[in-house]
Image (cartoon, rainbow, N blue to C red):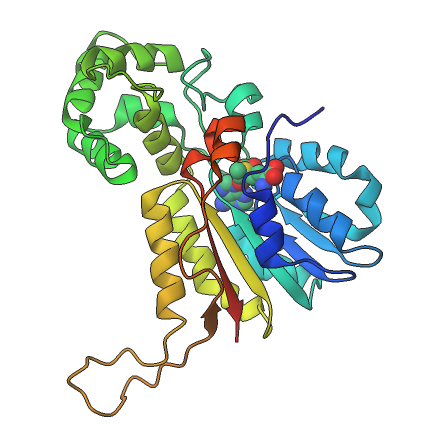
Length: 310
Ligand SMILES: C[S@@+](CC[C@H](N)C(=O)[O-])C[C@H]1O[C@@H](n2cnc3c(N)ncnc32)[C@H](O)[C@@H]1O
């Protein structure tokens, strides 16, 4: 039961969240426990870590990896949209830092049996939480109308060939249901011109489906709506995104909450009475070094943004 996931931007996360002796942290997407392990090493002897993940498999993996920290570790198998409730239920207060490392882990990609990868033949499932979510990628592919599939591919992954792929899916499923990842890959490959690139032609289709099945963009918005309520002054929040739409949501929220007044410039006196709640710690997103990209290709699109509660 070993994780194969390499935590991305680990040095940068540690630099900006700056965990110290006896501080408490929340890792909302604990995955294989890579970031959490480093944080727990730095927050001994009494600092605690609340780790959440929506995938029960990730909770098992991180429990195994973090066994030696078990007295300082609370693991909860819930979506991070429940963060506020979980923090109150677990009476996990005085939080110094919160981390979200969005998307999926290499463990899910390679060994979940849930069809996250276009390289392994598995059922088209893609749910992080098969217990809580009844809606699978196969439902989208076999039941949604063409226009809705096209819109989903465009909006979630900015797929330039969304129309062609959606049309081909409809044609193919007239013959028989598309049940597995490789059946879907075959449809996509036929309809996306192959460029000379390391990126597989089905990358965007798979990303869009995973995001739709798990409601990923909405979940980030829901988390941001609540998270400030559990942050005390000085508490830092770091979010790693792998996708421009996700990053835009985070960037706009951080910007909005780090400015006092949002009245139009032509109004001389503030009427909105908005008060900044956050200080930007990273003015620009922090990305991986060339060394990290060459060691871990998956890190290439990672962006870390960090704020501190005022
Ligand atoms: C990139 S991995 C995290 C890896 C982790 N930082 C590490 O170092 O091993 C992202 C994790 O977020 C989890 N996840 C995705 N959506 C979630 C949600 N709504 N709530 C909680 N966890 C979620 C996934 O199941 C996955 O395990």
